[in-house]
Every structure is written in C-alpha cells, then in structure tokens.
Image: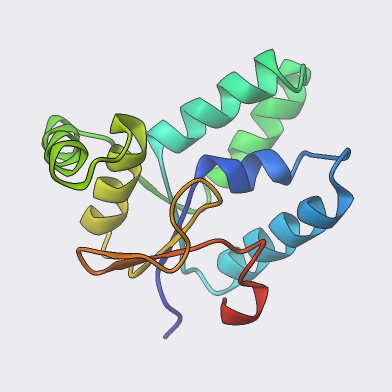
Length: 142
C-alpha cells in the first residue's frame, strides 16, 4: 500500500506555474502519481488557498479553476473542522509554526498521512508522526 501523502497548496499552485516549467512538471508528475496510487489527500483549506492564488495571483479564468477543482475533489478531501482548528492552534503554540501551516499539519495527521508534501515547511522534519517532504528538493524520496 502506498504511503498516504498530504498535498499542500504550493503543489497545486506549481502545477499551474508555466513560468516555472521544471517545478510545474514535478508538481504535475507528483499529483498524477498520488492520484493513480490513491494515496494523495487534500483539505478544504488547501482547495480554498489554491482558488485564492488562482484568482488573485495567477488570474486564471473561473472555468479553469472549476475544472481543476473537479479533478482535485477526486482525491480524498479532509473537511477542516473545529477540532482540526483546535489541533492547529495547539501545534501553532507548541511548534512555533504559522497558524495556517499548523492547520495543514493537523489535517494531515487527522487523515492518517505519514508524509506532508510541502515546499513551505522544513523539509525532512518529523512532526508528530508526519514527515515533511519538499518534492522539489527530494524528488528521489517520494
């Protein structure tokens, strides 16, 4: 069975990044691999953050964003609940991480993921049973 891996927002954003072709290809390959192995997990927070960046920074058309949401909702999607927000608040306080990163980590833990794919956190760090992997640095480890 494949390792359950939580996908952070930056992976979805790089999948759209035609100005970063190497990272775009890596993100697309990672998403395909996680989809085909049914081991990729997202959260409602990640999808909201993706939409915000897609609208404001990437200026993608709504139809394009909707089409990608249709694809991304085929992954397992964790609903961010008040319990996950409380866990995130605790992680924020005890681990000195940003509140939003802490909610991503809490969502990964709740989903039983042992890997968190993210460029935004400390690659290689093991936090409460979840290993942070930067797929753009650690492509061989995925």
